Length: 222
Image 1 (cartoon, rainbow, N blue to C red):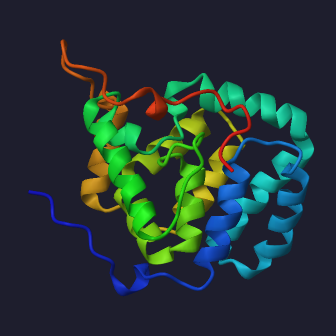
Image 2 (spheres, rainbow, N blue to C red):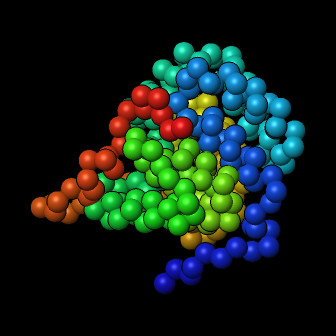
């Protein structure tokens, strides 16, 4: 039986975690008219982050600035909305399109509610940008949630790298805020890469109500 994940001293929340996760959340949202301001803010804050978090973040900023908001928005849709292997919804990697994912989404919303955090009607609780935004407001709980989805995050990072998508560097920056992959997690990544997320058994009802189904990023997470 897999041991429950625990936080070793080196894995505890650090003061810079809040700033890193907030910036990463903003930059993982759909690139809109606020994108230039987000890029500028990230450039100002980057020097305060550890080198392993800062370096890939700066690489993303350079690519985003060179690409421009309109082209980056088109690439965002092509990458995250039309490539299932680049899914930004974290519970998908653990549960696939099954009813268990619906339960995981409900539990995630309950976790947010206990912290006094409410989502808007058009936000799914497991979108990485949303999870990072929550982590910035409740770092201890956020670190736990991100660590629980460590294997899925790594698979998303690898998929983005294979697609040569600029967000691969951003995922590298996110990964650098988390504990290194353990043996069980490396095995989980290899298994997910080989087999894909779970599938619902034939004849069962859909895994979740319509409001939990991923939709195109017409404005993306906040």
